[in-house]
Image (cartoon, rainbow, N blue to C red):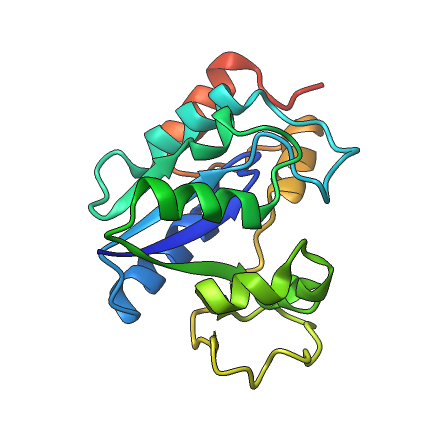
Length: 191
């Protein structure tokens, strides 16, 4: 099977994540897209984050009836820090029958050279890159293992959704109805 790995904190998961995951699955012959929940990102050390099990629950609510999209908890049991290269090593060992592609935004591609062992990552997987507004050209744009996709440009961010909730606004159009219902019920992101 060919698996798309969509890494993220998903704090919270929003409609943009789901639309991009579905687009990649349908247009790039992916059998499944795994939304890999990062318990703690090495690049996001100062933001308030729900516990990873709470974020997992929100993702389960969002993808419950969407075929080919699955939450992935692989990093929950891996030692910190959670570098992609370590996660890939574990996945290759656990699933030798699968091939993997990483789904990422163009903004992340511009910083890909800062990832631990990025050269090795490029030897092991392909990168499926979705466009982001204002993202600059990257030294990886023409790399043979990088595909700059024609995915829709979606300018939704989890941080904007958290700010919206904190200010008392209702971001229900940005979230799966079940995700919004759970956030509203639990009081997540209000403080």
